[in-house]
Amino acid sequence: MGKERLLITGGNPLEGEVRVSGGKNTSVAVIPAVLLSDEVCTIENIPDIEDVHVLADILRSLGAKVDYVPGVHMVIDPRKADGYQVDYRRARQLRASYYFLGALLGRCGKAEVAYPGGCKIGSRPIDQHLKGFAALGAEAEERGGLITANAKQLTGNDIFFDMVTVGGTINVMLAAAKANGTTIIYNAAKEPHIVDLANFLNSMGARIKGAGTDIIRIRGQQHLHGTTYAVIPDQIETGTLMIATAATRGDVTIHGCIPTHMEALTAKLLEMGVRVTDSDDSIRVRFQSAYRAVNVKTQVYPGFPTDLQQPMCALLTTAHGTSIVQETIFEQRFRHLDELARMGAQVRVMDRTAIIEGVGQLYGAPVTTTDLRAGAALLVAGLMAQGITEIYELEYIDRGYEHIEDKLRSLGADIRRETFF
Image (cartoon, rainbow, N blue to C red; front, side, top):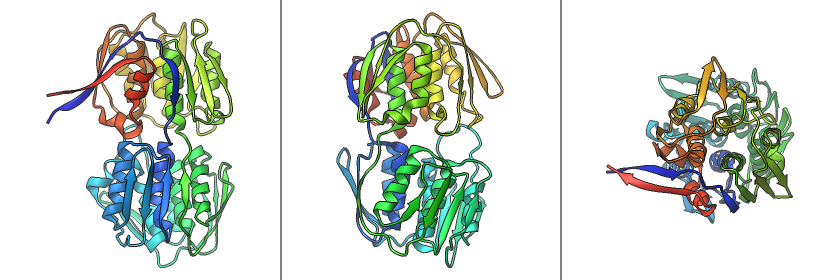
């Protein structure tokens, strides 16, 4: 069986209009959350990506009925879902498989989930998740590649996270939604997809307040009903398209996005000299003049997203001057720089800081994707480069971007997918 690669002939400015897909990070939390419902749920605006297909497969393995029509909706009937184990083969395919811990704890008081997979971008401990479950009255432990959690009855409690954790915040929200009493999460993550998950749970009858702030209050409900819900647009795909437009010195209007979610990136693009304007649900990015180097430091929301650090690095490789990029979230999130160097980038890494000296031009080369957002960085670099760029290991890109080459091609990119043996 052959594998696939992308071939990009760079140099074409991206021009036109494009619509952003539904949010990956929301979808991978909302799909497991349906297990908390006592009725059928319909989720709209779900992106057609590999992570979504795997989550649907996991739901079916637990006994749920799933009808997924890409581009339309996913209808989930959880009423006969009596399983509580997510096996190694499925769990290792994505990081978000660990959200079944909180969902299954809330549904049936027990969960066994093999240690999750996903991108190798650094240490991603789950100790804060387990701390949260324990505070709710569960016995939770990680042993031999298996995470188990059991509780006769979950009871609301005050939970103080030692660090801001998106996954931990989501998992505790899921477990606490049907717990007895009130749970208060302190030092909660504030990302847009956490707000969206809270809105989804509330649409099922949950009582959650404060999502989007660092204190979330959850009053447990015994029963949650069915709902129809559309997830928010993908913040990271929006940012990737903004960066790709700037990198190719193009002019693109991105529709169906939420500009307020993009303020940290927009500020950096404006600082570089990119022209960015927005309306209620669209953002226009235009080339204006030669780009200046800028310094970037990744931070939890509303700071600069770690998921946009890698494509941003690609853009900075040809900015005039020296850019300094600090990665504060994941310590192994500079592996893409070795591939950018193959294309002529002048980069060096000191601990968790990348120093990027702007060059006049990148050049096409064979490169390999090492994780999802590294794949986005290589796409951006290939669109900028002179000549042909070959991108391998596309399964990472397919995990998180819906038909990205089709969208880029519609904007004038010379990009095609081919099978090789």
